[in-house]
Image (cartoon, rainbow, N blue to C red; front, top):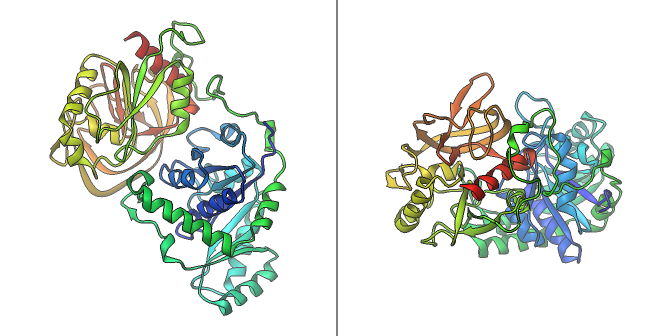
Length: 471
């Protein structure tokens, strides 16, 4: 595909400025004009891409320079944008906020530079007038490699307020591309880890996305925004689209031992192991590239819902349970005793099981006092404390996902605690100022709080499928 796909990055001075409303609304507005829109989200967030998917009819994808490395941002973007007329990338936090202690790494500004994409700054103007010019000027001039192509003013109180803001921004030399007033119906409910996922409120989410699209259509200059996107030019570095069939490796982080020691480079198409992937309202956190990598490695990927399905998919040879909100659905998950027993039996057989965060909780003996699968001799419970941040990890021993010594980067985001926090064979050693071990490796089970992006280490998926094929 062409590496010059039109694109915009929607950023803000800080969280809470209205990035998600504007980005999602802009995606919906462009789609309503007949454009094929590619939706993207900077960082590890799983929830916003669900709203993006509603707005565009395409899978929402993440661009994370920490989890995947800067060199994969362009290829992953081009992979997601194939066949699209325009791409909209929603930023994370403030424009220049990145991984703690890592400078610009994984910030919205960093990703914008890696993509060569113009930035549209969404400013909450509710408590300022002329000062908006100083704010925008500061963000536009802070890094000369970041091109702030325009501003969208959010939460504007009145026509007079708008006049004052526009007069001030004329002096800053940054064009106003939109003005949005407060509209209650576009608000989306939040919970302890952010917005409530689409899967839990689909009808209401559809209405909210439609309202966002209408608000952006009414308040923004879509023609000017599209023209700005089309002026982006080629993605820097001559990037080619990432592909799960032959994905790029990280020479500084990948480990040759990730590739299974036996078997052909191309999977045996005659033996496609069935890998069950948990979904539904309780397990909504996943990256699209994971299932693409599993399928490319030769697996038959079958989704199931632990809230409703009483059996694993027929012929299940391996199980992937990603993140989500099992604590919200603990009673329903516990009540589905037939499936809990099926999961326990699969794990007991030695079949490969990969569980992240919510999946870890589901495999525990109990969650908030309610019986779970009992695969792990550990208890889980909700707490008031938020655990959040990027992690640099190394595999303690061999597992169905990685060989001992393999380095991967991950992300933690939860308000739960598992006791004990690791098994006799931990999954990861977490590096940094406070080194620790965490997670569980037992037989074919790999369970951990860390969310990882398998595109950064494609051998993970190949190894997992190979183990499913031979276990």
